[in-house]
Image (tube, rainbow, N blue to C red; front, side):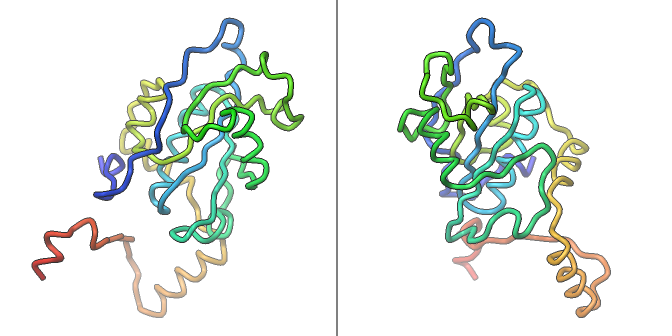
Length: 203
């Protein structure tokens, strides 16, 4: 599947810690998930959509902090409509949650035990954030890593990517460009020289 591919030389994820099994009495309270996707646009979208699947399976609330970087200088909502059941949060709130959950560590996935942490912020307490993931990874690897047995077929992938909808202003620009260049049918194709170093060096 194309979704399992990544650009040569890019990291598949940050360093990670396997999440332990839930403690007794927490099965009905899976806790919220905070995702901080990294790298380029495609990697970020793929990571978020994988966690959409995981959040649905676990009945968890999904929080996302979309960090502005050189590869992605804008906010998610600058270009796309909100994704159902996904809450985008700001930097300050994300950092607060990460400090509480990870205890200052930079590992990308870790479980916390709210019952042993009495210094819980009210917002975090309401959301009961128990899992933080920072980085990017293929959908297949993410689902496997977090214990999902879901096998995504082409129909599933089509529905998932259908959740990514451009905002009206961007959509108008796309259609305007198509009309100006008399393009009735089009497909988006992203080619990067670094993905084809051998071919590029021979040209």
